[in-house]
Length: 308
Image (cartoon, rainbow, N blue to C red; front, side):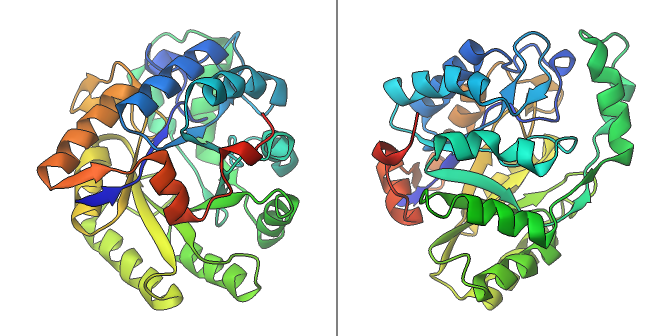
């Protein structure tokens, strides 16, 4: 059976607490939902932190520490800490937790872009917290900064830690940006490409785009040098993950990427989304990769060499 790495992006930095009661906010909620997602079949946990009082995105390592220690004690899942944080954070703030804890993996956005989710505000009349409305509506003016200098800074800050990256590519140009860093010797195989579709500001959720991104990656890097995965925003999540698995890719689910389990129905947890993609993969004759198998495929340093 083909082994598929399932990543679960547990909370993110774009969705806000008003949008879903299931979105984990406190360290305990993030830990509990992470552990449940791992138990359901996620080999990798992609983690952001939030202010436990109001759910706003935060880069504070002390908040991360509260759930990272619990996850490490109770699960063998690969921990992947964001270096994206939110589009409103400067890069140094986004990097604080990764530098402090030296995880096996970090996400790394491979180019600057518009990053917008303001249309979601039209569906909300009352907000739980004062910050949410302006944050969501203000995303029509967000530029998610990831310059070549920023990307090199993140890579070089974690070189000695042995941390590897989930290279997040929101557009075709981001694959070429990655190729530039491969040529510079800052990225070495095997590397992990996350192809992202359906974010307003990135490549659109069309199957032709996914197929072309995959063929471009094959041309730029050569088959066998990288593993690739797909995430798709909102209602596009499960259809695109199904297509990715059919094409031989890995998959990412989680409430960071979609708050729903099916059209018009909010997911009750991250684990529910993991369980659904496990069922879909099973129908294809695939099964979830274990954390140990994911570590082998991605050339990771191992959970005993992190600092949390």
